[in-house]
Length: 25
Image 1: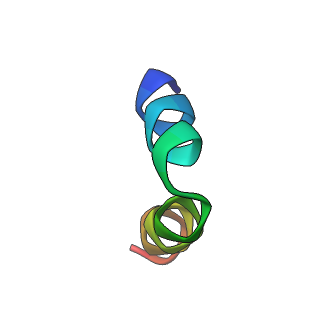
Image 2 (image 1 turned 90 degrees about the horizontal axis):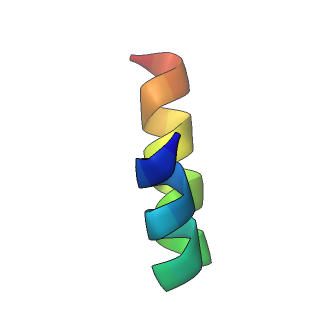
């Protein structure tokens, strides 16, 4: 969503971790 785009725009690595965390948990 919007949060994904914001985080991805700021830091790709953080976005990857965040997306993985959301996917797993």
